[in-house]
Length: 218
Image (cartoon, rainbow, N blue to C red):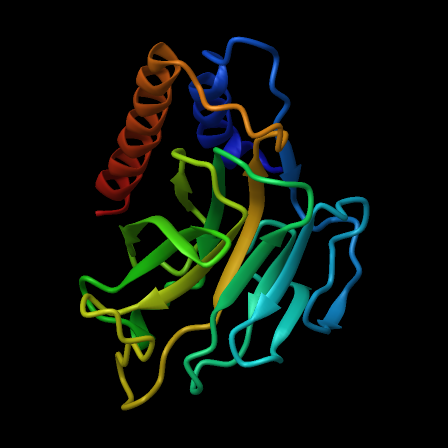
């Protein structure tokens, strides 16, 4: 994990500090591979508790891209509306975050976004989104902190939820690129009310960091 992502990671850790017992955070940064094209259902080396799938059954790849943070997970391609699904194999979780990028201004419009949706089995738990800053860098974070949940999807969409964000072309979207997937230890423990407050403060810190980044970019 590079230094520019330490602040969001620290905010996530602070948000989890209110658990009654010690809860470890797991971070998957994909630096251990495997590399190249991946079959649906693959696991990052050393992390069998989380399997990755694509909506269309193909298109997953681990690769280093110029705007990424070392090796990242890509969901190709940008003309078929494909998106990512993650399935936990070790029970339910209550916290999930990840960095994302590839928000190319040439293939997106103002208001386009990353949408994270979480489920417990087939039941919808909730969803959240982050609007692209459209700087084509891996410098934004999206997360969800209310469980339990055991699977999730991450998709790039326009404001209406259409996966074809457009930009310069009709029916052209963006390849989802994510990294630094962070989640709790899967014990399935629901935090106390004070812990919820700390989680909300933690995500407020992430939001403040992102707002400062946007101001600096602007």
